[in-house]
Image 1 (cartoon, one colour):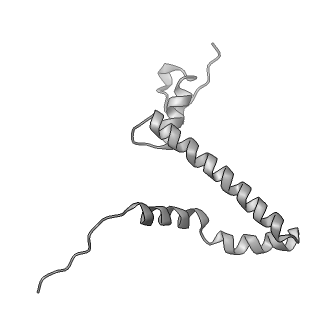
Image 2: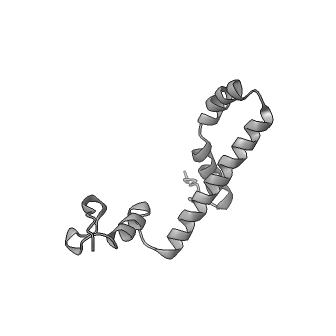
Image 3: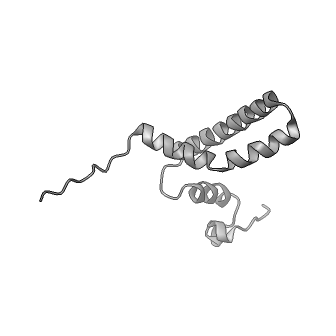
Length: 104
């Protein structure tokens, strides 16, 4: 019997859907009802939702710029350790666990 194997491939559309599902999660189904109870205005809810989306987009674009400027494994750890190692003593190692701010 021949084994049929699924192709292990993730394209742009499925990957985008996974990211969107992780960002939205189930919270939208509970918090929007609580907000609507307090706001009493659906248009205000949509405006707040759009503003939150713009803020999230700014954060995503910031991380993409950081990733392009500082390529390497480590993500946020890499960004923060490089940023704060500029301000720390070289003997501290520059790692986030040993950030020491020294007046110069």
